[in-house]
Length: 184
Image (tube, rainbow, N blue to C red; front, top):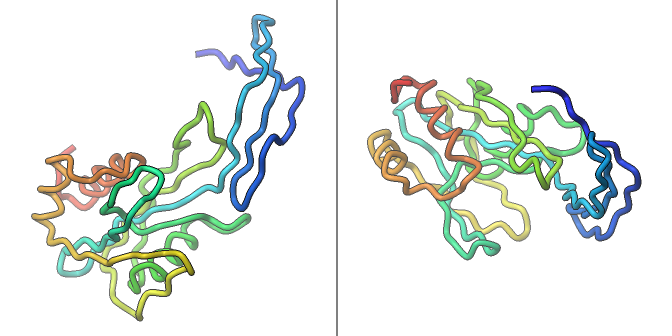
């Protein structure tokens, strides 16, 4: 596949609030056509961790996600601060949300979660041998329940499509393969 980049002709921020900005750009395609406006959503990069205890329990977080109107059971994680190492952000987020430390943090992969619209990246990790260190420290508006799933329950939920956080599904499978719980 050839590198057929677009040329940005103009760019302006149409909306900004808290941790999101929306840009409108005029772009020229390689064949000369102009697309105006092309909308780009600037949001922070994030990380998520498949946390596993020495007893092969998966530590997850359960929370209500207002935008989708659903309760999710998902990997702990969160936003990466500007300039922060993604692995350090992952360990920080796990400790903040679950109280668990990640002595064996392994990268699974990173990706662009929604490249047509968003310019951020997502990093996914697996943490083996996670041990409880302290009570979670939630942000002001986090309402999180820490959930421990035995390995068999986790795999059953995964294979029956019971996890509903879309960007995490691939990482859940990749983590299960990395752990040797599923064959590739």
